[in-house]
Amino acid sequence: MGHCVGLAPLREADLPDLAPILMDPAVYASGYVMHRRPATTADALALGRSRFLAADAPDGVGFGRIAFAVRLATDSPLDAAGSLVGTTSLGDAHLANESIHLGWTIYGSRWWGTAVNAETKYLLLRHCFEELGFGRVKLQTDRLNVRSAAAIAKLGATREGVLRRETRREDGSFRDTVVFSVLADEWPAVSAGLLARLNAA
Image 1 (tube, rainbow, N blue to C red):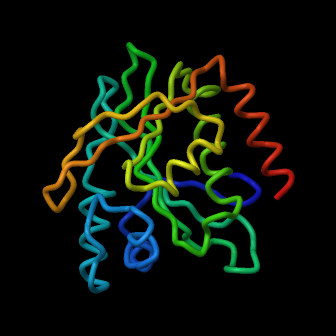
Image 2 (cartoon, rainbow, N blue to C red):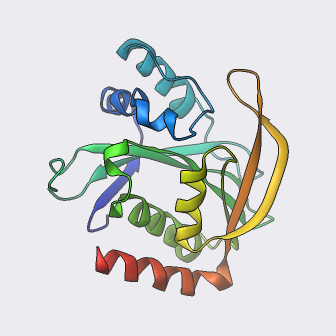
């Protein structure tokens, strides 16, 4: 639990709160194009169930993931404490390589530019490095999603490069994936930078 947000595993009961975020037109206008924008609430519930709840649990050899509900920890000018503001996941954990992927993140557009993403990522990066003992955390985004790439860079992650034609989108097209990472020996500096941002927010 942070000052701004709290994280818990995403459950079926969270999907009605996630549906409006999945239907937010601003999300897709900014370059989030891995799946279609749901047309109805029922479609959003089905999409949330298939994309965020259907994954297998992490197996330690590079497969599976766990999705988290990101909820406000306190009241804010925009919403009350407990309001769902998005989801993010940890997955592709490879214990032998000490690596894990932090991603599959989506927030409602009203929360862009707030402390939500910085604190969410701070909490999960701290968990990965200080509690789980990983040596590398990967973050990545679609090359078209320049807003997301800028947000990842602002965390203090290092841009490693672009994997061309790396992942098929839902519409059949292929995305170029921009890859970032944070290493364990970089975490103290990244942590200090994130805490400074959060303290100033």
